[in-house]
Image (tube, rainbow, N blue to C red):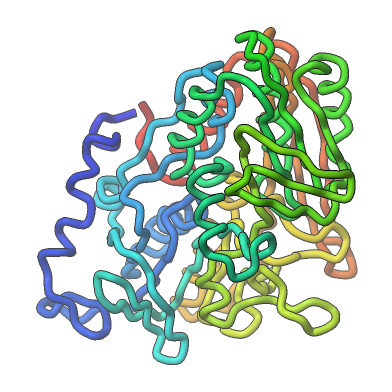
Length: 432
C-alpha cells in the first residue's frame, strides 16, 4: 500500500476545502460555473465505490464525497485482530489523498440535514447543491429499542460496552478485552437484519479460542435473539463447551448497563463486561430525509425504501441508495446481506445509473450484486468457511438469492487477498 494513503496523511484531509469560501450551492465562491454534480454522503465501501465508478464512467461530472471521518478503517478481518490472532491487516485509507488521486472532491464534514426540495446537503462545512445524491451513510444502532428515551443509558452502553460493529469502536473494544481478567462476558446478537450476518458468531468463536488458549477464567454468554447458525452452534458445543454458552431465541431482553445486569424470559444474569450489540437501523439521515420504507401494513420500517432494480429512492428519483441502509429488496429473502462486498457492487451500480441519466439516456436495470465472505471456523489451526451469495432476476421480476458454502481447511490469506482486491478494484486504492 502506498505510504501516502496511510494514516500519516490524515492531517491534510479537507484542508483545501476549509480554506475556500462557499456559495449557497456548495461551489467555490469564485471560478467557473459547475456542470452537473453528484454528492455522495458516506465514505465507506458503498460511497467510495460509487465515487470511483463515477470518475471512470462519467468523468465530466463534478463528484463531491462528504464524510465526517477523514479515513476509512475497514471492519472486515477485524475479529481475529481483536484477539491477537492476526495483526491489523488492512491499511487505513486517507480519504482526501485518495480523492485527489482519483479526481473527485472530498470534504471532511458532518452532514446535518438534506433538503430534497432544494437539492442541497447541509453540513458543518457549508451547503452543497446536487443534481443527484448518493446516500451511502450506513447504519446506526437503535439503542431506543432497549432504553426508549433514556439517553443516559444509551450513552453508558455505547461507551462502556461497545459492540465493535462500527470501525470507531474497534480500539475501545480491544482495550476492554485486554483488560478482561475473568468472569462473565456477554455478547448480544439482535434480530436480523444486521451488519454481516456471520460476523457475531465468528467473533464469538474467536473469543472462545482466546479465553481457552489464554486460560482466562471466564465464560462468554451469547444472548441471541435468533436461532443462530447451526455450524457455529456445533462448534461452540464441541470445542468451547467450557468457554461459550449460547442462548438462542432470547426474547424480551432488558438491560441495565449501570448495574451490569440483563434479563430475558430465561432469567436474569449479571456480567463483568459485555459487547452490547443493539438492533440496527439505517443511518438517522434516512428518517430525517423522509426516505424510510414501509411494510405491508403501511408502517415505516427502519431502513431506506428502494427500487431494487434501479437503486433509486421510492419517493425521490434524484436520490440513489447504496450499502447497509437498504430495506428489503425481495419478498423471497428480504434484505441483501449488509456486507462490504455488497456495498461496493451497489455503489458501482448506482454510479452506472447516474452516468446514463446525466447523458440523457434511459438507465438500464442495475447489475445485481454478489457477495463473498471469508469466515473463521477455527483459530488454531486456521480454518475458514467461504460463503458465496449470488443474485438473479427470475421471470416474474423478483430477485432470487443463491448461497453456496465451501470449507477452506488450509487458508492461505484468501480473505486478505479478497479485501485487497476490493480496495484496488472497487475503491481505487493503488496496489501495494
